[in-house]
Image 1 (cartoon, rainbow, N blue to C red):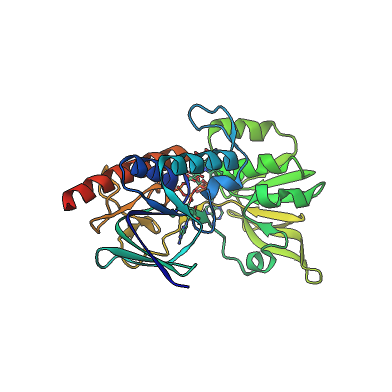
Image 2 (cartoon, helix red, strand yellow):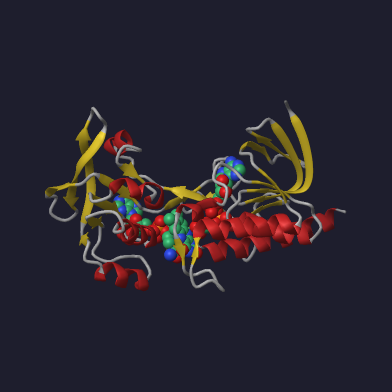
Length: 313
Ligand code: FAD
Ligand code: NAP
């Protein structure tokens, strides 16, 4: 059944940016509708401890996101389980089509669709995806109890994943293309102190190999970036943690993007090139990409939407 819903403010995405926009938008009496997408709660639902959310020394990512959802709902945001498949920003009211069959029309839109894990793009990575190759240690780490694992990357995600995987694995090899990690120093300290983790510097993943029946990983071939030498590392699990790309599918042809697909916003603002359309969080932030900065941008987006709508009246 096709349903039509109109709202003053449509928020697309349910990470810290979306829920914070919901809290502020509702308190501005905009009666927002927030569409959650296929990952309710966003990226923090696939991690464990979050230790840098102010006021919480330690909180589980999924718990934090449930609290944010409750807060947005209590403030007055209508939260809908749906995924937007098409967005028409060519005229106002803007139109968004949900996979549920609902069409949403809105006077203003906050885009908060966040980011998704990047992959290396190797054919063997694709072949074993879901069968030994993963981008989510908290989702899949449990399957590798007592096994050897490799993690690829050198940022916060890679280091956190490597640390988390030591709860299950007998050995974790961290493969990084340089000899210096990008991650926070506190995480690096934990990594270097952990006897189960061995960093392998100046190496890139060349190929994942394994069995066909059943489909499963037996090891990886890695290449020294300077000498080209190939080494085989036996392992049962391969975790790719090489960063995230903005989820810009809805707007990549209509809004200006830069730095690999991040939506461009005006300086010190969440305004995009289309009046009434605001972008917040990891969709636009190529620099900080933190829960708190996303929440801050969600706040800005709702306040700017409120101002925009007031000017229209
Ligand atoms: P996201 O959290 O990416 O949420 C995007 C939302 O958009 C999702 O709800 C998704 O369902 C929705 N969506 C996407 N497309 C559509 C669509 N078409 N229709 C409807 N909805 C859609 N940051 C920290 O500050 N501290 C940490 O400890 C920390 N740990 C992390 C651990 C991991 C493993 C990862 C991956 C990230 C971590 N981060 C951490 C970074 C943090 O998670 C992000 O910066 C933050 O979640 C970005 O928030 P966001 O609201 O912009 O988007
Ligand atoms: P990131 O910071 O962009 O790091 C990506 C890592 O992968 C880098 O070390 C990079 O190497 C490496 N890499 C990229 N492409 C590669 C390739 N093709 N082959 C091999 N290696 C490659 O990404 P992230 O770690 O996913 O973090 C994303 C954002 O989320 C960051 O802003 C991060 O701070 C945030 N986050 C925060 C926390 C936390 O606060 N605890 C936890 C997780 C994530 P180089 O270093 O050589 O570029």
